[in-house]
View: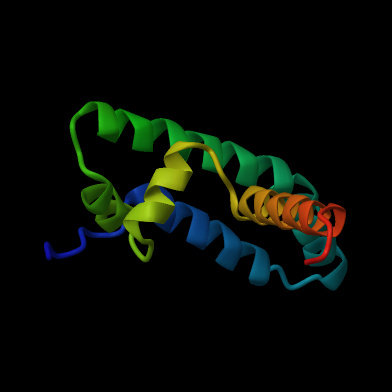
Length: 114
């Protein structure tokens, strides 16, 4: 297994920005700033997931295997890497699973007892 590369500068900047929020001494200013970030977070998270999906698909186009991509992502299985490539988030996977279970339940409820 190859060694993990250094943390990219961009990741460090995001972590530093979070630390900067924490270092705001004024409680009012800190609360307002953190609240603004949290208000924007759902859109930011979605944007990051889309960017990752795009890049995962680019890796596949470069003939990388799902195990190789899973290793690049880190902490995921090849199956999860493939789901990321399809744009399936954790919430979407849970929704799909619940829908399949509900359909199976309806099918068994509608069938005559033996």
